[in-house]
Image 1 (cartoon, rainbow over the protein chains, first blue to last red):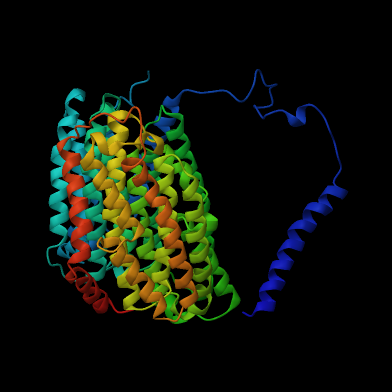
Image 2: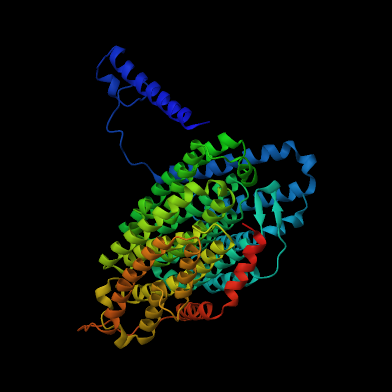
Length: 116
Length: 475
């Protein structure tokens, strides 16, 4: 790929993206109303402000959920090839489990599992 | 694959074991007794550092994703030495009551970043490289925000994570273009398929910019001073020495082995950035009154000097880089050790507070003096040899103008490195800082730094040893 090709590709990309934005700005029908700028809440009118603080406990639960969610992602491929990888693969997945369990115990010790 | 093949990753496995050990300690000890692990972990890490020097076989793991050679083992050992000194220096700070609930977290995060750096150095493809880079970066942001109730520290954490995210994005964009053109992420395959096309040069530029953030080269250095000032002192010293050293190592390995056919492009970039980094770092360092900011800008300037070694894409250039980083670890950690001791015992971090320090604390003043002399590159100390080899490697490629500018910059840097020395020995102060009784960990760390500053400079086999290892690696 030579330099001209590269420049052309960049130009085409800019023109396409910029053109689409400009074009839709001019031809799109415009409707301005109050509901359009509301934060989405199941079609019901929003009460109060949407920028509010929420309990950090949700965050801890989300992290823990993510850890164990990702765990299954790693275990499925291992389960598929379990016979081929044999004992070595078994030991590897055990090490993986031990590290995860240590993480759970750590979260337990730090009281991340109790809703305070 | 056999299990014993994993022994090739001995450095990483030992660090991982140590980190898990800390975790087990944390889980099964009562909250009030966790400070008892400090001497154990420090001692065990020193053992791990020694174990790193044991002879080890070379080889390749995971189908070429992980390579280990004598040179990479040496790089990891250099980083381990730096971390051992940092752990010794941070012991007294960790014992503070406000850190009592997060002692083990400090060790786990620090060891995780070190594991990431080790994987990054040993990487044989860009996937492993990127994973290591992220493992070295994300826990680092948590470490920078370690004093989370101090606004500065929280700000440092968020600045570090945002600028790292941006730089990782830029780096990944470059790598994705590289993958698109060569069809591989393995270093060898990319090197075989690389050509001089402009798109290839563009991907090199993105890669270069992404790594420039991590090494804090000048157009990408803006996060450095704020993060270094806000983070706790031991984290700052870790960032400025070990993290930067690891990034420089892998940066030069990739430039020398993957992008060697594009050296026509990157030599010019390195040339320009070396001048910019040295000059801007030095000029800003002159104006600093806070010792941590001062050391931050001095470390930017030192990164500019390291670039001189990268200009010489040969075994000689690589050796000078590794030797300089080793010397820089001892000199900079010596300076940071004194700053951290004074900051811990008196809470003072400004240069004015160092007036007449010599009256009450002659040993600390002397140590800070030799560390600063070594950073400035004054002959009997190791820093002189480090800089001398870097200048020599650039001059052997014919970059005389660059060496001339570098020498000018070294002269400028001499001015500001002497400012704290002048404050300590000449400036009169009505209320000099009181006598500081430092603890045994800090003392051992400072003695190690002093031994390193003299030892590495006078004992020439160190340089020869590194050179032999680099020759075996072959660039």
